[in-house]
Image (cartoon, rainbow, N blue to C red):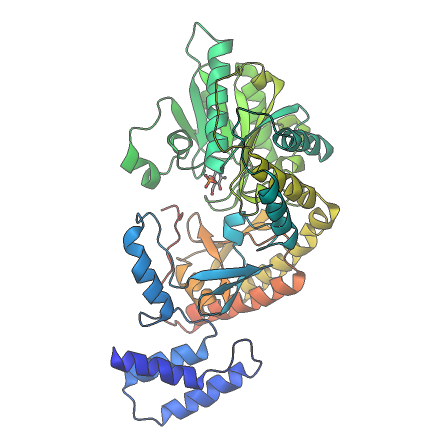
Length: 485
Ligand SMILES: Cc1ncc(COP(=O)(O)O)c(C=O)c1O
């Protein structure tokens, strides 16, 4: 312990100030000085690591580890987290408790579309917090209805599903899907009172949430098995398999849920043929089609809704949204058409917090920004910068990168091996990235990211990949909380 502490002190003495352009020169002076020292080799190695990386993971003797160790015993251990602890954000950057800066390509899993601590969002929260935060849904307020109207009008104005007519506001993605599942069941019972029509179809590699209904639609054994049995009546198909649809979706089916771009499952893009065939079959059997746009919607693909980029012939009956809708404030929504809404009666569903004045005001403000040409029109150029670097990485590491997937700023780099050591190496160089699916690096940065910031992050990623794939640097992989295996 004493040795570890002294090695930290020595590292600190060698370390140039953060962000200093002399960092590299400092690191090489430190390396030269260490080479001639008589310190034990493991101490030399540890100092070399800490002085050569801009944001090495805080060691067990750090202030960060001290805080983590004090708090962890009080938290239900549902998450695995890497060593840094974050306490500040601005734009596309976050700072840890040791005041070290990281560029964030994760945006809190596609949540912080307007970046961290956006001034406009902060101002709206502060204003509304002083006016009226919560009334319960027992009373009218002027903001829940305004948000609902805005969701419908924006859906129409931006080429989303033309039949959208009403919205139910809730608190999260899982709850938005839970409402959609309940609404589909209610439609099934109403249109088919005598024959069973309660089956629900979803697809392998999808992610729809962790509540019992949304979990039942998420056919990942790792998530389902500990809580089995699931809600009865759920069936699972193969994503993009057009031929299987007729057998999968039958007269007993009340609803089908699908992500136009599977996020957690590996950034898999639905083919137009698949969505058209699903739409056609749902109409044939009287089932409702639900698009889960919780991760891929709200401008991330360059259109307000991802499904607006598909032919009208595959438009849904419901769309679920959350994540970027609050930019960090917990809020979600289920948007429905009259075919669905005509079967929902007072008392069928409800929530205490959902659509309260504070959340609704924040989401209204965010919708205005995310639907603006300033954001939407900027996405293709930003995607192009990412793709240029992905292609360059493909040339640099032939055989290591199998595929580039996605659309807009929901992109995936399919590797042939476990990318978690690259996630760690990137973090220790000041870049946050996450994984998804099988061996896939996922890129879901804030939509306000600049092209210069993408360049900066991709240079860090290239360096991280070089250290892991070329130099074989031994880096401990970072397990993601939502990795699929
Ligand atoms: C596509 C999709 N649906 C649903 C959810 C669940 O949302 P939440 O975590 O807000 O409950 C997620 C979360 O990652 C998601 O990506």
